Image (cartoon, rainbow, N blue to C red):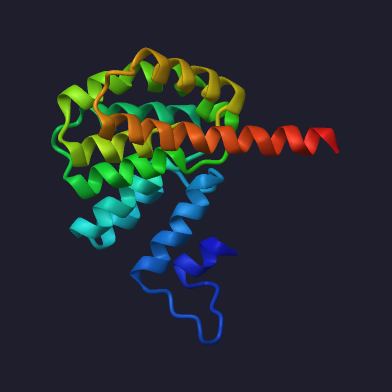
Length: 185
C-alpha cells in the first residue's frame, strides 16, 4: 500500500523513501484522489522547503477533480507571486492527469488565452504556460480544429509564439492519426 510507504507501516527491503520519492508517491496518490489537499498540506508542514512547496503545488494540481484543474489554471495564469519553478510545477500538474473529461473544458479556453499570455508574460513564463496548460488529453478532434483555426488567424504572429502552438497542435494531430488508425483496424 502506497500510503503505508509514507507512514512507515509498509517497508520493502532495500527501498529507501527519500524526499523526492515521497513526493512521487504523494503525486500518484493525488492523481487517483487517494489523498486530499489536507494530506498534502500536512506532508509539506513536515518539511517546508522551496523544493517541497513546488512538489506540494504539483501534487495539488494533479488531483483528478475538476476543481483542482480550475484552481491550477487560475493560479498559473494569475498568481504573480509564484516563482518560475512554482509556475512550471503548477502548469505541469494541470496537464498531468490523463482524463479527457478534465481537459476538455480547457480546450477553447486555452486558445482564447494564448494572445493574453504572450502579451503579458515573459518568454520563459509564456513558454511554461503555453506548454504546461495545453490540454493535451482533450479530444484531439477539438484541439486540432481549434489549433489549426488559431494558426490560420495568426499568420502574422511572432514566430516564437507560433512555434509553441504548432508543436502542441502537432501532438494533437499525431494523437488523432493514431486514433483514426486504430479505429480502422
